[in-house]
Picture (cartoon, rainbow, N blue to C red):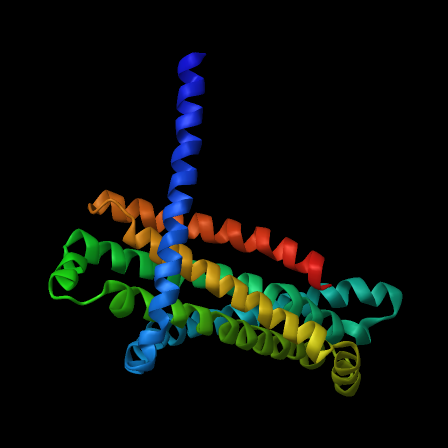
Length: 257
């Protein structure tokens, strides 16, 4: 029993100690963001690697999610004679919830894991140590560009996910199921607020981008510099990021809507 309590307590102490290291890491990384003003090319390169290269999976997923939403909404609302409100349901569901949440999960699985693996490999091959030996700050050269790129890219990807999802809903609702196109768009326009719906959805994307990028970069920089260590860090990035997105989504939804 005493051994169990010792292991349990040691485990929690290690978690708290690691959270403290992650917080100090974040402060150093935020302080290094100003250096990007002198070298914006580093940010552009990471925006392409983490944003543009994630775009295809986001757009395809958004299209299918919008199509499924329209189909399910039509099958439910037609029993109440409200099938013209399919567009409203699709738009609100996408911009408020599924757009930022699903995009965040996709971003964590594709770009977040890639950032962790890349930085972990740089640590395992002593490239980060080499930068320090050449008086190059890894926070400015490696970490800060990836963090800012994730923070910027995720809300933009979420907006594109929602826009393509609405088009998918229109494709199924209007072109396949025969809902009146003017009713589809007018109902959607009258029920959707740019400030409270679209704006809050973008805020969720910013929060998710901040958290996912922080977790991904810290896990890569803090991993054990072996192939098994990099693999474990990549797995932790996806797990921690997914749980953080779902937990934060509940809190943000409770506050915003």
